[in-house]
Length: 236
Length: 376
Image (cartoon, rainbow over all chains, first blue to last red; front, side, top):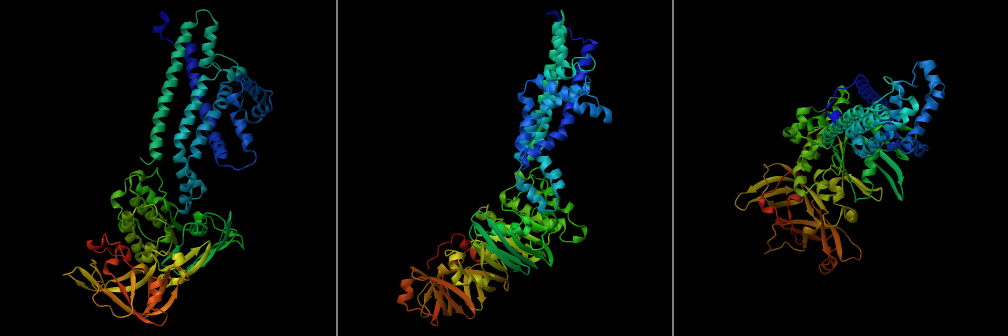
């Protein structure tokens, strides 16, 4: 058990840690506005396509990650329908880049983010919004000054869930953007790689500890922030 | 001036009501389910009625004929909800100032200190709504609506969720609001004591329709409306003035056109105008000026009308020097005394019947705090 006390990270391992954090952050940040919009539509919207949208959002949760990854590859690969368009006109490339890893993580974490936000939006007392309207606030102001502060705990919880999911994402990522050191090799894929080579256990164990530490810290942070926000929303 | 006409179907219920208000406090009175809240929600623009017209001071806010519908945030109608609806994430000061961000600067109106002072909420400003009592919440809600500089203030049963003590705590503030602020008020209530005390104009709603509208004393004095105004609490309103205090017995003498009333001590200066509600069930009828009777108040009058059909209880209205006094009697008494319109009689009222529900804007002395009992 000699490796257990040796926490000196190799450069590759440090790269994987940094990359994972970057992928997790952008997966979370990128999906945030979309998730707020979609969860509002699902919680409040009355349109015919709502059940369909609901199923679509939840698909990544129930499909095999490999399938999600493959669909992303078909859509956003270099020759994919959307991928070619984005590359040609906007210069955004996902295939075999860290941005692709972020996209895969975002898609996989999206249902969790939306669920958390949707629940908090549904819990908002709409009579408070009507009260704000009688005080002169238009819909945008009502949303900013009443709805948003009240759903903030749900938004934060959703962000943390998405971030944590991104750090653990494996199947869809490896299918979509492969496992390229320094570009798409995140913590889970690096651990997987280390376990495939003789003598890699020490590195795998170190990264496992890092993975656990980040997850625990994220959960504690989310709990603390959400508690503060919900106390505030409850008027304490 | 407010002008309202609304027709709207909600399931099996149809609201079809219209009224005008010249200012002051207009009370919409009726049982629950009479359509009061639907009517004020239409005024506030919280929904689009099927057919309807709402205008304040000539500005049309809703007119289905011309497809006019001003959204609620541009109506400048303050709304005090039954449950307060304070924003839980803001403290009292932030709640109070919420509407001010959006109110036009030129609107003038009441300033912060004046409203805080009027409602007695200065010591609550840094608190959160969760740490307020029900009465405090309602006062803050009233202040919040006022500070948005409204042209009209709607109050939807603002006291219904409070116990009696809290209610008595807030009523004086609403009276001051009515008398000191220049904002007309539409006040929804199903409570006779509240309406009798506060309303300048009374609109009686029944099954979604306006059953009667007029000055409060006039409507309360109509015995044909008794089934709607509530038999137990109904009664005529007299406009009185404090005439003298009797220190020895702890009584106060009030004068009205109908005569003198002696009531338990009121802590008010001589000359103060006071509305007194005499509940119909507290009034006895005597054919002659009674002698050897403990009751202190005897008002001579003429029977103006008798109603009640074939039931055991009948209502009669007396004309006492131009003012109405309503009495509730058994049909047996009406029969045995041969009471009929035109007959000169005397209305007898126990002083003790004047409990604190009977007065507007005054708290009677301790003697009456338990005097809910009244033998008709």
